[in-house]
Length: 481
Image (tube, rainbow, N blue to C red; front, side, top):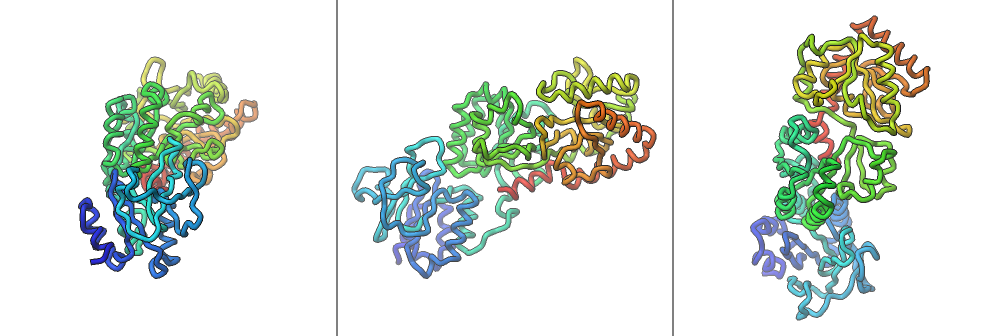
């Protein structure tokens, strides 16, 4: 029996026995397979027949997917003593004597030369070093998704994203108390794709403790943060969760619809742990995220597919023109909102209504769907501070997706996802008289041509259902991963 097959057949977790069968043809080259703290460490000898360009490329792709914490495809001939994970991408040194009491001495090692390397991805400690062995090495966290990926890599197969991220177990941190929160709508979308979603209420310390202790049970941590909850729960638990996920190889993804750049809360980008997720996905695509060291991806806002069901006309909600959203006490930095509300009140005192009414909670669910079927023109707005590009409020998909006709300020990037004049209509936002003259002309045009507004509303709803639901966004998130 070869050394490789002997090591593969003793003292390993059940999942490794499947690996033993996959490694047929590789067993003479596998030096060690070690399971410690749920990490699989596979070491391959420097054999030119196996370490060819093809395998090197596959290992590189594995690293790009975040599954490989450390990778060296070249012999290290002049090792240097490591002292910090920040000092170099890879630092190597000769391993201490086999009889040493160091943390590395319990590794199964066979081979002519051994090294250990630091793990550069860790950002929470300068001294956390992960022991490795031999010349060519990679480490893959043991979880159902990553282990399948490891097996398929050895079979010279890289699966597509659908098979790679199917039937995941997702821990979702957020606020699930309101029935119609973004988190509950996003959770519904993940469930519709066959994934299991465990809710982690962000302001519940016990939920955080359980998540940290059971982090290896999950394939993904999704996080939609509420600022007050994040401050109340404290940074320590959040950082501990991110560190635990990183050690276990569990991907962390922040998902949010808000803006930070140019607002008072922009300083949150520097110190909120939420922004240190492996990937942060927001609806603000025009900001300079790289300047803050944030691995950002942009996705436009969306609406829950069940919420696109058409409502019914209600006389109590009916009006010719309406504004839905925060119409009092909005971000003071975006003064356009206050000017717009005052202008609508002054110009259409008998025709416009604002929702929610004073003293009432936000309108959600069936009442909101009924509202949009009871008005002719919806005027919307987004926080376009600083000449924002590729950002708009979720009011666009939330309104258009429910079958309402929407007038919204024009913003760069919007026409890439909606056809202006076909799915909704726009005007150039500003507080100058000519800006409001343009809005007035649009409103009057559609007041006189309600059939055109109804046609645009129907086309817009169909477009949103096809392209801008959370069910679609889940697929896109999986593609990003």
